[in-house]
Length: 207
Image (cartoon, rainbow, N blue to C red):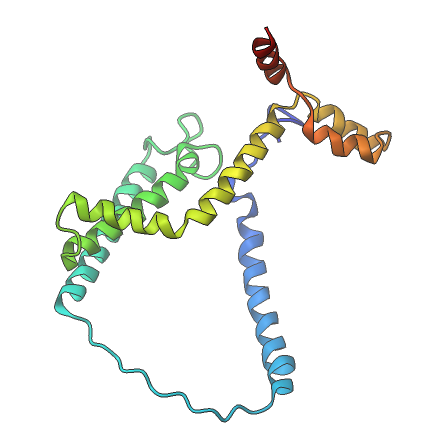
């Protein structure tokens, strides 16, 4: 948005209402298609599935769930105290707004991470699965080991976006596409243009 007009910004909640409505619509549409179209074509299922034995929640797990609930409520209260009172630090210092270009929206991802971190630590302490810092590090390592493929994919995507942002000819290509005066092959090669930064690095190496 700043590329078109430096004075305008888009809030993180710009797509929130559309996502809520579209999610509800997708639930109804997918359910109707599954119930009325897909399942009747599959026929009646007569297989037998053995009932799985249910395990009771141990006292340690129940205690961990209580601690997790306490951590969740405490985190929400702390965030609310930092957001809703007048002149709160997470409000916009000029307008006092919460939604929009405010510290609350800028730190929303970090706040969500801290809430989940508090809940996880609360459960670990309550269930006694985390008794030392070593147990916490092992749990984090196990979690990130399962996300290794996703992390690598996000790393590649972030590098491509960074290289794309370095291109100084991006606005020119956007205007050329709008006018329809740029050939397709030129537009494709514009994704791999050399920037002043890469030129400077090349000169340093060759010299």
